[in-house]
View 1 (tube, rainbow, N blue to C red):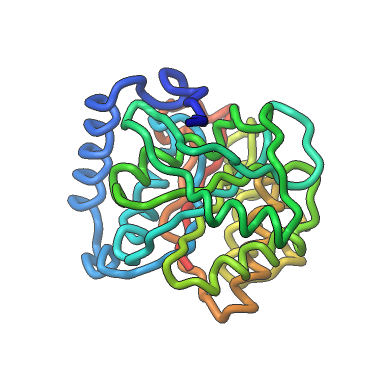
View 2: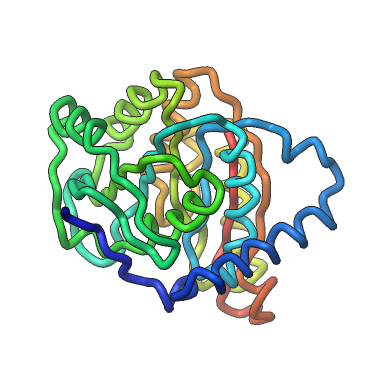
Length: 264
């Protein structure tokens, strides 16, 4: 049995289950005590955009979206994120049997992997699957959707239109959910980060792919663009759930990273 082992446990998120679950409890306590519209958490979505920084910085923002994904009734989730560690052309697929995190093992959907490999000519680039942008999403899935199977897709230099075709194909199956992983601007002053991030937020809110290329500096912009293309094709409407920066946690306003979560 081949396993996609965790690579960033103990760095981006805790290395033990109890500490991870304690963070989820904290995120939900803050969310439920400050949420003005309690009906938000009753919404259902099977396609979300979430950040991928350390949980102390972006975990709350991601958690809001996973609360909606939890309501969707999906049985499979495809997690899509950019490659940060290695140069990659195209998309690599997690051709393993399971994915291991401190929350335990989660099965990789071998049948869906086979279909995607055949239809879109995907293959495994092992070095790409030590990737934090996808891995940090998995404990959320294990917490909120414990009985699902998953597929991990890591992309590098890729045409958003091709990635959009994959997403559209996946969305044809009502039991499949999509997680798009991205952070926003990196290491600007708080004022400049908010200016740049506002372009990303407006582009997503209006499903304007052209606007994405007028200043949005999301590291997963290819995935975001692909999701917007697919959303327009499928008639899905975006709902921005949360936006904040690392300054909200660190207090450092000189070099911040931006985070958003979105449900479609």
